[in-house]
Length: 230
Image 1 (cartoon, helix red, strand yellow):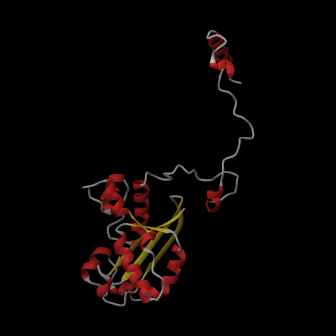
Image 2 (cartoon, rainbow, N blue to C red):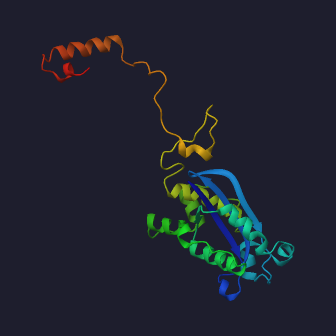
Image 3 (cartoon, rainbow, N blue to C red):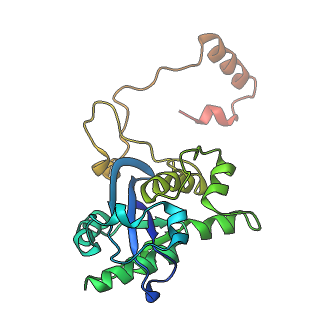
């Protein structure tokens, strides 16, 4: 199962009021394990950066001026995401911005049902407790010391760790990673099926224990259930 942990930074709170995306960061998971593949782009919003937004993420006009416009990064972003589930903290915010930008590019919108909202998961799992990314890092003992400002890629990497804790830790379905000499990669791990051992495991029962068991069964008489088993 492929998932993309995603975060964006923006110029404000409402794309309908002209706010734009200025950064996209995404981390790929396969069967709830990071693969090392990421997507990261800064985006020129074609509008001045409000001071309130600058204080959140530190991305100013001078830094963003030579960055690509969203329509340049839109298709590479969609190619990276494909049909994977999107793991987002406060998914409504990021999905709203992403689909507004995609609409401006005349590209298909991302389906809302494609998103997994970790904020909703945290509020359901820990009702009444703080559910910010920083609060969840404290709860799970995740080091976020480098998060002095919001950053889309860094926040995605941190959110990936938080998400895995929210759903029960890494590989919550107990699916073991394929390794060893089989040569299989994670791409075909889903096709793996258990097979019989080429050689049975040696018995861990000692001869003394086996003799004691036989004597115990004999003492139960001919009607003992053990005598009917091969």
